[in-house]
Image (cartoon, rainbow, N blue to C red):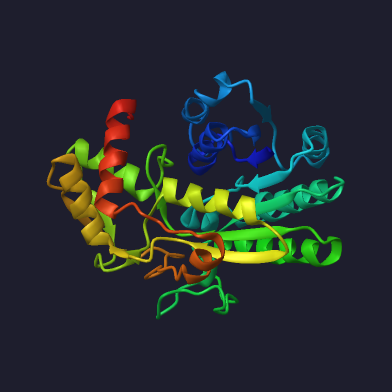
Length: 318
């Protein structure tokens, strides 16, 4: 099968590309190498893929509707995995219009391009656990109301879900949305907590802990997320939304402690106030994904941290 992957050079995207190539698929990658973090990091993520004759890379922005349509129509993929987005809750508070543009308009451009193909491809796209807002109870279920996002990023992701449903309804496009819960592992974006804290701990600097450390995140190892994506691609029909998480939330202070143990260091903590847009807890109910996709995350948190630290040290990350 030929699969087009947007955001192919990113953390999750490049891991997915490697998985698809390993199982024999052809892959067309799309990425604009946005300077949110260094392009050299992203290109290194694809170092193995670019050596594979079944991989082709298109350097373009999904906001360029004309070029995006040309690539999609030229590739004629059997499936599209849409991972390209402006990511991050806190940066979205500072630049909401940029998030609305890239995430919603870019997604709409891709949906339009997909609908110009005959036959139409299956389309799997990344949503986010952030759409659930700051919920006081857990676990989060796909049937829960998601009408109160507390960050522009969350609002943009919910808007993408609505647009995808509209294209399914109007055009009969097969679409599956995947609500990712906090993903970590090798190639992790350098701005995220685990890689950022890793650098600070190794340098002997204080780790910023927002709030009292009791906030919890459903950390999910990247290879488990990618397994869920591939299962969704192979089973995509109609319209579906699934949680992809681990269903085992970890407190912030416990995460910092476990990361210190994986690094063989004792972290120093600097306490800071809660941040705007942050939620107190995320926890995925994965019953639906397990039943309909066969999704079964298998990487314990401490094992995932060990594998991240091994990659971090091998890559000589700054």
